[in-house]
Amino acid sequence: MSSFPRDLVKSCLTFAWYSLLAGGMAALVLIPAFMGLTSSESMESNTFPTVVKFYESLAELLENHMAFMEPVTISSTQVGLNVYCGVATVLLAILYLFDHEIRLRERLAHYGLCALLLFSFACNIPNYIWHGFHQQNGLPNRFAFIYIAVLLVMAFDALRDLKKYWLPELLFAVAAPAAFLIVCYLNPEQELEGYLFLISLGLLIFYFGFLLIGKYADRLKPAVFGTALTVVLVVEITANAIYGVSENGVVTRSIYLADQTAYQNLIAALDEEEDDFYRSEVDRQRMRNVTMYVGGNALVMFNSTMQSSVIDFCDALGIEARTNKNGYLGVTKLMNDVFGIKYVASPTDSETFYQFERVDKDGELTLYENDNALSLGFMVDDAILEWDTSSGEPLDIQNSFVELATGHDAIFVLDRYIDMEDGENYAIKIPDNKQVYLCIDTRVAEIVLNTPEYTKTFTTYTDHLYVINGSSESNLADFTVTLKDTQTSVQAEVYTCSNEAYQEVVDALAESQMENVVAEGNTVTGDVDVKEAGTLLLTIPYDEGWTILVDGQETEFSCVGGALIGVHLEEGEHSIEMRYTPSGLWAGSGLTLLSALLFLASMVWERRKKGLDEVV
Image (cartoon, rainbow, N blue to C red):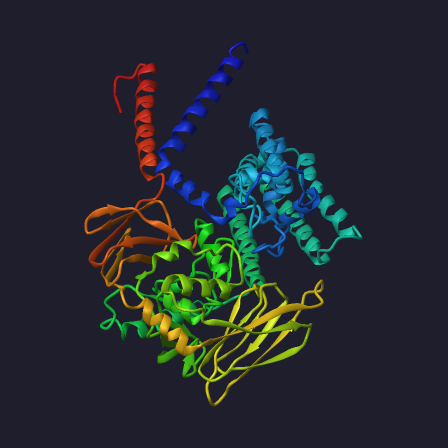
């Protein structure tokens, strides 16, 4: 007994040392990932909790072990827990308390870890720590798999020693969760459906009977009992999985594959014409990163390491944007050109779409082409470095871009204000040869928008620009707004843009563009013929990890509009090469190598200490 404290300290130090080495060997991935996360919006707005808050009570957490509970998917309230892993697991995890084949301190350690995790599910501060010092977002309690793993280990150990339990111990293992279910069922404030408690109670009794057979049926072969129990457990888990998927909504896999095939067929017909890099979008949000999925280069992205500057930039321009993601909504014709969005595929089938021209159709997708799409880089006036996107209305900010980049007058003109009221319908006349945009910068409950090109309903993120186009045959649009319960009136603005003024601006931007643009891996290359000295505006997110070579010489670059890259170029022909190295990559690589060497040295030392001659 006297050696116990010394052995404990030794075990703790050994665990700490090898844990440190394990983390160090993963530094090649961890450090760049951490550096990337530090620039994301969710991290920049992330602060350590200062007030203790509880999301759910212990009883509410434990209820999530029941069968046929509706699983938590995306929770805006950050409340919910997915810990269902079979009703038998709960019974066996309680029976584990009486498993005398396992040391008491080991059993207590398992229960202590479960208690800590349950507390962490409920309390905001440990929850914040478990989430990597980050507020949980969307899918709450993502570390629940650790809790489930511990329960399964306990259940396995308890089942292995089934023959050695006394009957009172078995009775307690089933009575405790059964009593809990009955108390919850009888609670008048309980919001869950009563049948959920009855199903789980029935399963508990069923498994209790099954365990009695396994314990007392001496003639029953262990292999037969194990096989029968496995079949029952698989049936229960499978039934719950099917129920969970159906509750979350089902979709046929072929739908996603059909969109992918349609897009690739449409683009394949144009590949011979497209030598340079270009962007495209799929105007259907069945999934995030849909354009990436079908094989295109998109403006839209959902990425945990997406820079907050990009989100703020898109939001400032009136484009749908929120934490770590943006959407292809609210992109003006000018910004489609600036970002080089040459093609849009959409389930909407009309002659034009967002002022793109119809090219072809395959399956449910129609492809539209933007003849004015600019290259990945184009020359603008040096005054663009003064572009401030931190405040102002979206189209005022775009007007500022026009003035600074080209020296032309503003092209977006405020036509009128609309004081929107709940349930009211408002008509908008589309003037000939003009673009029309509806700007709503306050989120409402719902907007139903009818234009000559499309009819859409917006219910989730409703604070951005709306593109309204028409033709000489049909030049009327209308929209109906549903306000939130707390709102009485919300103001919207209608802007117009002359197509002639817009075209003059785009023509000016198109005078000196990058050509022969190739984007592969972490490298972008191209050539540009600069007619007049100025700034090469690259519609690539600004990041200090970029190295830019102009005619083979490393060149300094600037941040434009808080999000894009600008490089000053003198008149003449230039070759451009950009290389990206993630921040922290070299530091992480060095730490990984050092940790690996220390690990090998530690193994050699351990072996020598034990008197072994072989060397790893």
